[in-house]
Length: 276
Length: 114
Image (cartoon, rainbow over all chains, first blue to last red; front, side, top):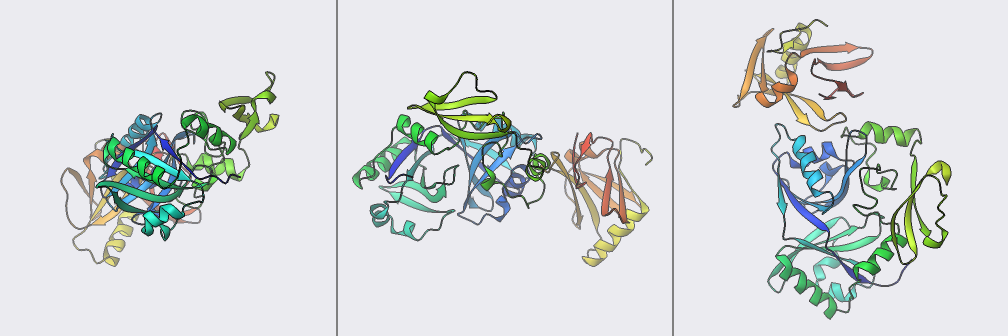
């Protein structure tokens, strides 16, 4: 566990809008979580998988209204995600638009009193919901959500370009919330087993290999990859396990293990269960 | 199941009778059966049936057994040559699609890939 509170600039996060009356329904038929149940101003993480249940992308869905979703992807997977959604858009009223000038900053930690003094509305916002807020004439979406390992976070989407990101950072410094550098956050991420796009979140693995069960609704209807996910879970056939190891303990003879990330003497490894 | 010409789809008398009953229950008169394909589902494409009363643009229209079938043209690419039947037997109840374009179908029977 950790006691610090800090913010991170997620500069590899990329955004796109999915607009249209069938947008939510289509995404529900292509991903693991029940996004159809998402209420307005709600956030949910869902996983788009291929026919073999390999991961296309893990994305946060921000429901602006019934006809407009903001999808939070990342630099590694966004083009693949767009192609995948477009491939399955046949008669549906659903249009994908890249949004280049949005940015994401997240606060992690529990010392949030000063933030709540600055944004009182946020205090009573429930987890999985977001509010719209303006700081110095710059617009933000601010949501209470979680990282991919379930650790709670407060997520800011800066809607007015780089300037809005800089204003937000300045505000956070003013209320004594420090920024964690990318290098320091990488170590934090590894120690807390938070999978990252391009490292662990790739089409080499399925969601169960990465311990992402919390983002799978096993009782929802069909989606692409659902039969494989259900079979892996029901018959306990998940082949891999993600775990943290010390770099000093890495042995060149480790069978069935792939090191996917490393920083500060620690690494994330994905191993064949039978060799662990 | 016999084959039908590739430029049409066919509905069996049993399925047509069921469709007429659904339309009557919904109070739609005149009515048509819209048969379409949606993206997603276990195998990538999902059949979509709907009783409709207003025509839309770009639809192929077929009349059989007292039922007007409307198929959006984009969907027709995936449905050409399909026979729509209905089963209420012990091993499953509902509309059944016999689609010559489907390379793979999922267990629930409503999803397929081409």
